Image (cartoon, rainbow, N blue to C red; front, side):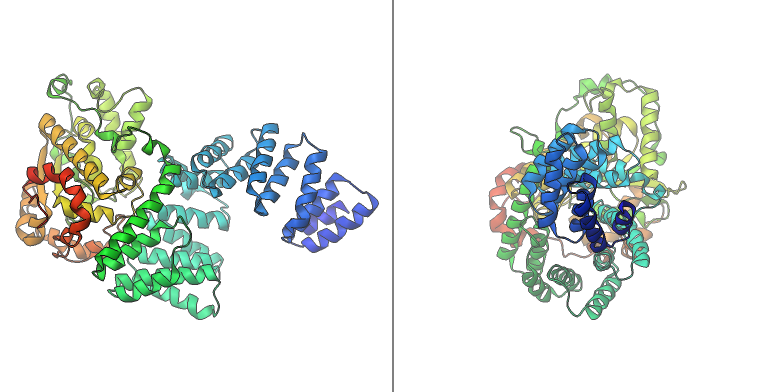
Length: 603
């Protein structure tokens, strides 16, 4: 009889398993195995009100069984009784602290309850206990993503080697790659999944969103149209998802009125859906309804900050720096004590593009990437990763950079190249272009590794920079936290720029300052100057960057829609539309306005 019950449960016939279990229990009342089978059969039929008491009875009659307490906890969780489920999971883990399945289930409960840091720690423990568990690895990566924890990349890096990944985990993996900005990988995973499950609606919806993200608007349109034609009645959530994606496509195609109508019909998914308000703000901006744009942005940032306070609480501790990397400067005397080391010349060093975000760094990167002698990559925090690795060995950046000898610097450069090669297929006949705006805070480490590198600083009117940043849904915790208000954002800008100016005075790197206003006003002259700075004979490929960007399809920055268009003046003086909102930030920003020669008033 027991084998028959197990067979029925394993082959998806819970009704049969229930009948057989009840018949067996009539002959053997209270048998724990049969009671468990009955509870499982009821749970599989979503009859939780009947299943939970059975699991409870088993836990009470076997108080030292972590398995029974875990089963009871999972049933409680499925029934929505989360507080009781937490207590039961804690009891199960007290009895069996290394049970990976219970750690996984408990971590997922914590994640659902928005206990993000605790969930990350629980799920990472499950991964450490069972490194081969793809479920533990992927769910730990999800928790790291919410906590802006860089370990997510290490968790997902070997995904190409994974075999027998079930469909649910593959969907989760695709979504995580989209979160990381790896939309092309997400596309591959979702298209493969769709071949296995052609009618799986969540996969089709996510793939439609990915197509929009990689600038294949026609494919996104076609996928949405197919969904709408095949499903006369979508459930509420999916119907709202189609409205949201239609709104994005309308915005991309220049129909902000229709986009706003669709967004207002859909509304936010939940209280934590700050993304909805970022898109709404962009739509209102395109409609020239600037007060509504500001209101939507204030709502977006308020909701995002609520999540960040739970996900990265250290960012909000009293006295926490806006940019930790901007703390602790090297002075000239300390720099003179650095040992002289051999290093690559300019031709064999990366070209670095830096500048406060939204200063035109992506435009410069795409221009350089269009040149056959250069190769760029999507921005990655490689120098932050290397600094963290040095910290693991007791070397603090920048304070201890004088301790780096020839061997360590050579190994750091090898490590940097290895990191690059995880992201792009390196063309060794081309110079690498490393664009990461906040590398402007990493100049001491960059200079120690590549002292002869050419560096381009992207500069743009600070008021334009502030407004553009305030409109972004940043994943990076420092930037997202800095966008709490325009005054806070102005403090972040001044902090970063002062750090840069100090380090430039100390290290005297080879820097070219590219003003956005000059570049869009006279692209031919400015690209010629950039080409001369880099030693490129032919500057004309730099002017064809928009075609190169369209050919690439996917660009993993907030500028992904703009840089597929030729140089234009649309981004100039955008701040003038938001004078009133900017006014409180102006006193903070004034020193940098004066330093760079921009007007200090808002007239």
